[in-house]
Image (cartoon, helix red, strand yellow):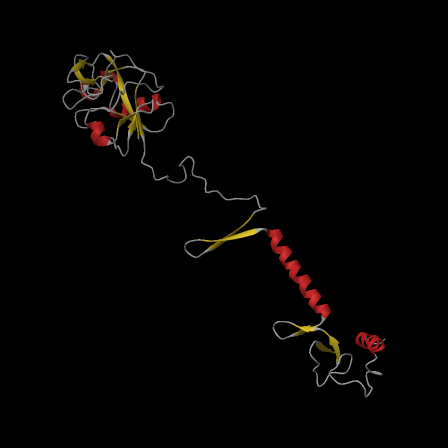
Amino acid sequence: MPRLPAIVAALLFSVTGCFEDADGDDCTPGAEACRCDDGLCQTGLLCIDDICTPGEPTSGGVTTSPVSASASISASQGSSSSTDDSDSDTTTTEDGSSSSSSVGTSSSTTAVDSSSSSSSTGEPFVHVMFVTQAEFTGGLIGSLEAADALCEAASLGGGPHMAILADSTRSPMDRIDIVGPVLNTLGEQVAAGAAELWSGIAATDVGFDENGDPISSNDLAWVGSAEANCMDWDTETFEDLGAFGVPTQPDQWLSAGDTFQCGLNLHIYCVSI
């Protein structure tokens, strides 16, 4: 079967009439449709199978036939199309690293931190305090730990709580670690922190129960002190005394400066920890 370049050369000869045949003496080596001159051809020609054929060299100096150039363009367009289809964006960050994202991709990763159960938000812990809706006989509370259990039950599963209550050896300040602001059950700030809370002067009314309902202005709450604590909240002699506070009075909530007999029923203060 004749080679393709020979056929091309023959066709060019019939049109131009510049030579008799590829082997003829009238065909100048290096000219179009003539044999290459030691592998070289005139400007605008390429040496293909030892025949000078029309073609242009690439910018890098490497000669390329018309077919190869077309294929190169097609390949370039295909590459561009592939890039366009991906529709990806590359972003360089401040530290010099880069990240890419595809517009057509719907997947995303979200570092989930809405409940703070798996990671800290960096915000200070917010304490919530309330006055128990129920009232308790001072001499029958049992102990500070028993009072904590009463607060846990009253909190309706709202997490750990402790009773703001003192006995003969421990004060609320000694045993309760306040590390952030304290709110009442309406969300109002009672104290900005431990110092303000234990000063005994609240920024607002603390007289709201675990449901956010206000208690009566006549109601009182056990607080205790080193001297008046109903025998550490465990006495059968109800004539013993226990210190109390007035929940509806911000300047007397922690101490009213007076005592009641331990046989009476009063509320208890509770705070989340």
